[in-house]
Every structure is written in structure tokens, then in C-alpha cells.
Amino acid sequence: MSKKVIIVGGHGNVSLRLAKLLGSKHSVTSIIRDPAQEQDIKDASATPLVLSLENDPPSEFSQAFKGQDVVYFSAGAGGKGGEERTKKVDYEGAVKTFDAIEGVEGPKPRLILVSAIDIRDPEKIPAHYTEEDKAISERVRKAIPFYMQWKYEADKNLVKRTAFKWTILRPGGLTNEPGKGTADIGRTHITKTISRDDVAKALALLVDREDAAGLAIDFVGGDTPIEEGLDAFVKKGETDFLG
Ligand SMILES: NC(=O)c1ccc[n+]([C@@H]2O[C@H](COP(=O)([O-])OP(=O)(O)OC[C@H]3O[C@@H](n4cnc5c(N)ncnc54)[C@H](OP(=O)(O)O)[C@@H]3O)[C@@H](O)[C@H]2O)c1
Image (cartoon, rainbow, N blue to C red):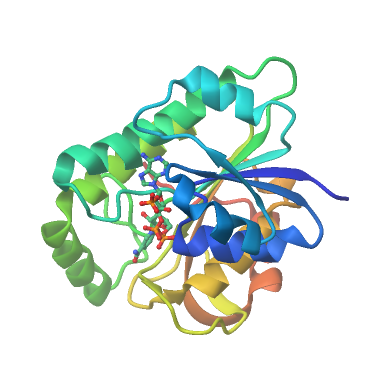
């Protein structure tokens, strides 16, 4: 069935791919903060809406979300502007989005949030991690500590919410390689990158997976067909966000 979908971070590299995938079947609105990006959004078969996570109040986002079936959050500071901006966009912008969904009168849209692999309490090392996973995790935490911290704070905030349905996708390092249509999904290692095409494909499939509510999904490079792997993950029903 055709759905109404809105993407926060609409001009992002993943979001543009997602809009193209969803556009043939669903009605897609993409939130951007720069009107100069409007044509790119239209070219991706979506409708642009100009709003800034940093400058506009939650009430404006609630208004934009009213009547939508699904909100995607795939925004991020992308490492620009130091810790302050990472906190503002990746954490405060995410929380603003959660509050805005709660602020929608009547039926509330579902949320599908793009987080990242290995976002967790640094003290709680997942039992399935190998020595290689642990070494990579330590290296990444040293390289981008604020990103890891503020994504974690956003995810911690979201998993407590019960007023709307949510799902978190946790991709590994992103590449611009062509998608393979395959991935490793659920309780993964953190060694393998994943193409943005494949992340967009998983996000597009999740539009119809209301039964993925309450789940956070590790998603890295691998050999399982994405639809099959997601289906098995959702049926198993074990979240990858371990606190
Ligand atoms: N890079 C990786 O290896 C990696 C790995 C795992 C997960 N992730 C996550 O995956 C997600 C998508 O990645 P991506 O490569 O598609 O990111 P991206 O290309 O950097 O897109 C992020 C989008 O967020 C938007 N944004 C920034 N500040 C905003 C604001 N104040 N208001 C509204 N929108 C704002 C940006 O808009 P502008 O175009 O105006 O700047 C941009 O379009 C991000 O959340 C990222 O953290 C990334």
C-alpha cells in the first residue's frame, strides 16, 4: 500500500538514494535546510520542505509530520563544526524529531532512525565481539569520540519512548560503491563497510516492516540477500542495541 513518508536530512547521500527507491510507490517529502537543494530533491522524485533541525522549533516539525505514516531520520553533522554541531544535529536534532513525533495530534508516524554500528555504552562490550572487533571499536572511539557519544545519547533517548513505534538501523562505515543487494544483518562484527545503496535498500524495505518496531539492527557488508536477512532478523526479534 502506498504510504506517506518524510525524510529528515533529505539531501544526505543515503536519503537521496532512499527517496529514489521509495518515490515510485510512496509519496515522499524530504526536509532540507538549504533551498538551493530543492531541484535535487525533485529530481529524486520527492517534494522538498525547508526546515532546519538547528533553527526551527519542534512544533514546525510536528506540523510537517502530521498525516505521515513514516518519518526517517538520516541527518547528521557529518563531522563538520566540531563537537558542538555534532551534539546539535546528531543528538539534539534527533531528540527534537522524537519530541515532534510525540507532539503530532492523533495518530503518530513510525520513526526509522539511521544510527551507526557499535553505538553503545563503551563499558559494555558485546559478547560476540572478536579481538579484531574490539581493536576497531577502540580505534574508532579514539578517532571520533563525540560522534560515538552523541549518537549513543540519541539512541538511549529513543529506546525509552513508547508514544510512537520506532526502528533503528545501525550501518557500518558507509561507502559509495554500487550496492550488492546483500549484507550481514544482526549481531554482526564491525569489520566490514556497507554501501549507501544497500543502506537505502534496507531503509526502503523497512517502510513495510511495522513488525520491526522496538528493534535496532546491525547492518554491515555481507552475503545474505537484504530482504531475506531483514525478515529473519525481525522474526527473531532480538535487538542489537544492548544499552
Ligand atoms: N559516514 C559513515 O561512515 C556513517 C556510518 C554509519 C552511520 N552513518 C550515519 O548515516 C546517516 C546518513 O549518512 P549520509 O552519508 O547520508 O550523511 P550526509 O550525506 O552527511 O547527510 C546528512 C544530512 O543531514 C543534513 N543536516 C545537517 N544539519 C542539518 C540541520 N541543521 N537541519 C536539517 N538537516 C541537516 C545535511 O544537510 P546539508 O546538506 O544542508 O548539510 C545532510 O543532507 C548519518 O546519520 C550518519 O551519521 C554514517
